[in-house]
Image (cartoon, rainbow, N blue to C red; front, top):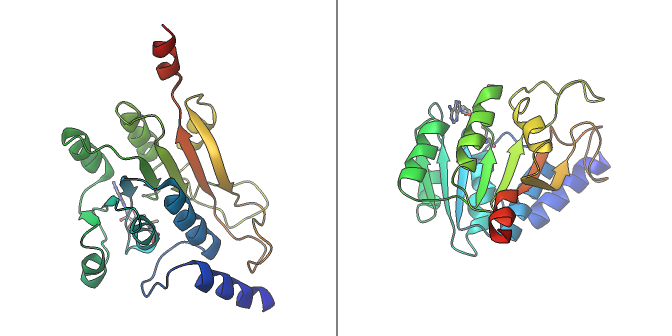
Length: 216
Ligand SMILES: C[S@@+](CC[C@H](N)C(=O)[O-])C[C@H]1O[C@@H](n2cnc3c(N)ncnc32)[C@H](O)[C@@H]1O
């Protein structure tokens, strides 16, 4: 009960008030908001808008420095008054992620912050990041929800969407982990319950090929 109250106090203190529903847990919303504010991206790419849970916090976070958020979802969308609220900074695309990525590449709109929270198809996230790696700039950030894999202490972890992309990034020397919320242990003392996340990662793109070509 005390932690439930504390969670409410912390989130109402540090997060903008959100009248819309969403699918992320309180500490995940807070971290995603803080990361986007700190990274201050000019162009955010989001895969999996849903009804706008994560889109809301990223849209609030980019207000200060004037970024733009491109989000896609071929099946669901945030409500009209949500889209109106962020009409100067938010572009919702009723497209699949591969379609939006191709469109952005074709129009030379390179993201400097990427957030994946798409469908439960392991190949999709891996294919998308590999196609993005062909043209994003060094320094681009990457975050993903449902990062945790089944098999640990938290029996409620069931998502498979990061099953292929997680080992790919962990074994890549081009991506550096900047932060992580674990799904198998508590991340902060003030959240309620035994676990407070299903996994949320933050990586930075630091490809070695840049250093190699500069050294040559
Ligand atoms: C977990 S939900 C997103 C939740 C949302 N980010 C939030 O915080 O509330 C995943 C979404 O991915 C969408 N989706 C399914 N296939 C997709 C695709 N090929 N590209 C982008 N999004 C897709 C689904 O329609 C669904 O709304």
